[in-house]
Image (cartoon, rainbow, N blue to C red; front, side, top):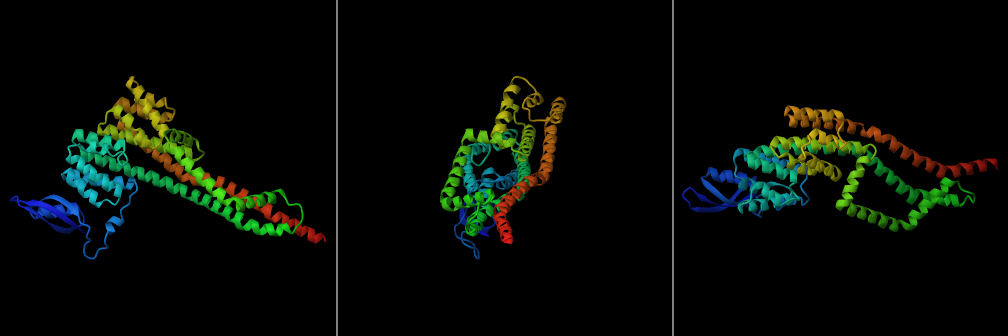
Amino acid sequence: MARFHYQGREAGGAAVEGVLEGDSAIGVARLLQARGVIPVTIRETREAAAGAVPGLARQRRSRRKPDLDDLMFFCRQMYTLTKSGVPLNRGINGLAETTRNELLSTTLRQVMRDLEAGYGLSQAFHLHPAVFSPMMIGIVQVGENSGRVDEAFLLLAGYLQRERETRSRMKAAMRYPAMVVIAIVLALTVINLWVIPAFAKVFAGFKAELPWATKILLATSRFTLDYWPVILVAMAAAVWLWLRFVATERGRLWWDRHKLDLPVIGPVLVKASLARFARSFAMMMRSGVPLLQSMLLLGGAVDNAYMATLFAGMRGSIERGESISRTASGLGLFPPLVLQMMEVGEETGRMEEMLDEVAEYYDGEVDTDLGNLGSAIEPILLLVVGGMVLVLALGVFLPIWDLGKAALHH
């Protein structure tokens, strides 16, 4: 348990302060209220509680950008606090003390100061775009305007949880192919640096014409041994230049456009992005976000710059009075079945329900594709491994075979 220094006032107005142990600032606040003390400030002291390791809570915190897990737990806790009627200042202060992500903790402290300065919650979130996405800000803003902030955070928590599950499935499906590729790269490195040089000494004593495969292996190994520092620098420079290019707006747009055309993986990325689009659109319509504003916010939900530009282009058509289903058909991304579902949703006034069905449809498609991803990639990996083994067999064992036949003839 941590130690918290508090300042407050008793029922009679007398100022009090002291130190209490608790799991969180919220727990200490409840304890003080039970004692008839109104807390004014509660701060965790640097001194660790008895028997605790000094600075352990801070050591566990990470300075990385908050991931889906951090934001999901934050939204769930905000839903619980707002649903229970806890004041925003007090709730956010408690979350800032308990979250393990240092950047999120620092941001929440600043949000608390912004609230005290008179900002609304969505306005305070808007000042920190590195942590809170435009979609999150828009949903919270609608919750503030409608007086249903708790429901807004509940919707966000459910959305983030589904996003986490989708990404986890994609990572799990790619784990096996990635391990095979890494094993191939390591095998080639070992062969070039140690195996081929050992055979080169044997081949040098043959004093005979070597097969083309053997010459290729020897030349590759010799180049690797002579220029490995240059190779490492070139690879590092290539990675650095690629990351710099992708970090630019033009580079990210180019890469996001072309990775959708990748074999095997591209269709999965398209369907996952369409599932995010449908789910986010349904959530915003259910929350009461204006349609044109939703079109602007959807770009941040699909996590693909190219598809975000396509969805943002729908805004102009909708402003001209075209229906959502007709506008979506012009993108060339949705199959006829999904377009019919959208059209039925518009006609019956149940668009958000149909969008939920579309999201479920694409989630099922993604699950099926991810389940078949390993079997689809396996033939490609087998061809690569088979080609490598063939070249090694021809290059290493063919000269030895020829030498054995020559020895038998003599």
